[in-house]
Image (tube, rainbow, N blue to C red; front, side, top):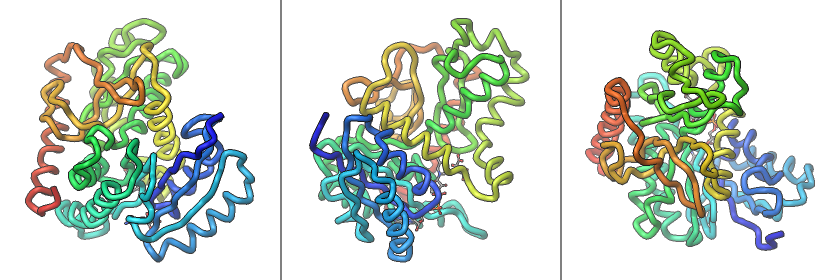
Amino acid sequence: MTTTPVNVTVTGAAGQIGYALLFRIASGQLLGPDTPVKLRLLEIPQGVKAAEGTAMELDDCAFPLLAGIDIFDDPKQGFEGANVALLVGARPRTKGMERGDLLEANGGIFRPQGEAINAGAADDIRVLVVGNPANTNALIAQQHAPDVPAERFTAMTRLDHNRALSQLAAKTGAPVSAIKNLTIWGNHSATQYPDIFHATVDGKPASELVDHSWLEEDFIPTVAKRGAAIIEARGASSAASAANAAIDHVYDWVNGTGEDSWTSAAIVSDGSYGVPEGLISSFPVRAKDGKWEIVQGLEVSEFSRGKIDASVAELTEERDAVKELGLV
Ligand SMILES: NC(=O)C1=CN([C@@H]2O[C@H](COP(=O)(O)OP(=O)(O)OC[C@H]3O[C@@H](n4cnc5c(N)ncnc54)[C@H](O)[C@@H]3O)[C@@H](O)[C@H]2O)C=CC1
Ligand SMILES: O=C([O-])CC(=O)C(=O)O
């Protein structure tokens, strides 16, 4: 058993995803059953009291792997020595807010957080951005952490990936475990492209098991708009499923995915599949030796090309908008 605890910083710790996430991290599900963790909770001043309440409950679980909990309202302190950072806290869109306002408000959060990560995080820092707009928030943070390798900044599309797995399993009547090689491409937004053209179900090509009209009219919009459907049904955005996906993403990043299948994560583009270099876009990925690698050499049909390009165009627009605001 590793004896040195891993420092895990969680922002937005008092929010609903935070509440679903922290207990799972402390129980060992983020990094594995042999790795002790120290939690560093970062909140805004108004969120600190609620975070203290959550910390009391974490204490009351007596998790054997939980080596300590500290609470901060200053990013510089919150990221000091962090090995893993889960950036969950973000400014949600409120009534009357334009997209530019949203990007600007989030720039005010993710720029100082990127700077704080640059200044004080551990050398092996790995960052997952969950707070929306996740891809562009990750880009802002990454751009303000010039001393951290760019590949350490990622954004979450694993929830979309898991949603796609579940929808395809339900449609084909197969268990989720029978499905391999699904991909989410692009932005964590309604333009994302859930791609089944390389997926297999029990070894058979998924695209031969479903018809194209289901794919276009049902599967793709259901996955892409699932976040909105959850808000409509629950009266609040997805929380436990988002926390679950964050756990999956970091667990795989650290422990590896194996060669048998792949998953999806938004990572800094190296230009693969025509996605402009530097954009943080979702790709088919495997993790090996603690690094994400884009699965190369997949054939991209004209249909898929159009969908990937549309989502990447949105990411490019978001990057241009934050450039104009001086945030990157
Ligand atoms: N990428 C994905 O798949 C998903 C992303 N999300 C996004 O995750 C984010 C969090 O969702 P919830 O937990 O439901 O929201 P929430 O509103 O319940 O909690 C957010 C928390 O962040 C805190 N916060 C705000 N600014 C902060 C800052 N500068 N530093 C530290 N903490 C700060 C708030 O005080 C609040 O406690 C939202 O942006 C949501 O849209 C949600 C579901 C899926
Ligand atoms: O749609 C939202 O606001 C929350 C979200 O990102 C999701 O559930 O995918």
